Amino acid sequence: MDSPALAASGATSMDDAVIRHAETALDTIGRARDAIGTVIFGQEKVVELSLVTVLAGGHGLLVGVPGLAKTKLVETLGTVLGLEARRVQFTPDLMPSDILGTEVLDEGPDRRRSFRFLKGPIFAQLLMADEINRASPRTQSALLQAMQEFHVSVAGERHDLPRPFHVLATQNPIEQEGTYPLPEAQLDRFLLQIDVGYPARDAERRILLETTGAEPAKPSPVLDAEALMATQRLVRRLPVGDKVLDAVLDLVRSARPEAGTEFADKLMWGPGPRASQSLVLAIRARALVQGRLAPSVDDVVALAEPVLKHRMALSFAARADGDTLPDLIGRLVSRLG
Image 1 (cartoon, rainbow, N blue to C red):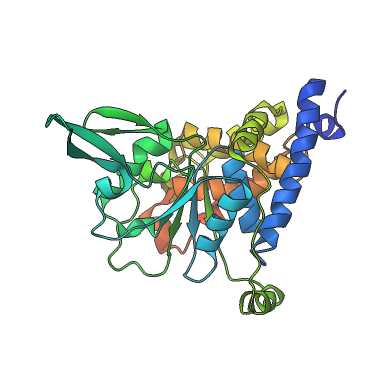
Image 2 (cartoon, rainbow, N blue to C red):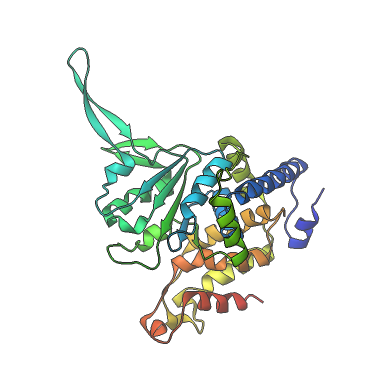
């Protein structure tokens, strides 16, 4: 039995058990979106991209000015998805041990002393790193191993993180005083960069009515950690057609300076293979979020900027000419046909 969505995408067929699981997941994800929508108003694209990030098993960087409900979104995601969520406010004096944890010296009844590891807030299923660029590079780097390998090393000992494990970090794009730009290696660990804009007038009107009353709305749990991980495994089993895979390769490879395109002199560096991996996972998750069982080229187009924007840098000449990364990515996408 093949889904019409599979046939339209040119993807290979899935077995009946996977299709039944996928159809159940479609209903669950729909209910999760509705639950988030009872608290987060007018940010449908941001909500979708956040769900795509988590369902694809990745980490997200939320970029927007203060007051746009970024923190509220992460808290709501934790509740709806049934994840243990913790928040860390990143500041210049934050130390790596404040995130990872530290060893303390204990003395037992027999007066023998030994070290005991006290876990830090990173030992959560959903970690919100609020204003991540306000911490020093040393503290920022404490997340690198965790985000890629899902464990941390303290005093030479390995400590595994809970599963699933996701980091949703926020960043203010306006105020740069007292901040430390994230290094390229750190940025590359984020599956998507999610730009959070101002809500439309009707949505802001609803925000005023819903959040200033006696009883603000509260989200309800829809999934738990086990159900979420089952859905993440399903995402990896969704078929990707040759046409879609070629679109991913064409897009990512054309965004590199050595590609020899007319944009080569506009780039200092471009995305590596992790960008291709991220895009394939993200388009699968987006298809599921939108009620489809296989991704299409339209998913590649929609996710090109969130996947590539933080993995590229314009040359000095391009910036002097007024070029921007969104414009450049848009021109690369238009070449897909």
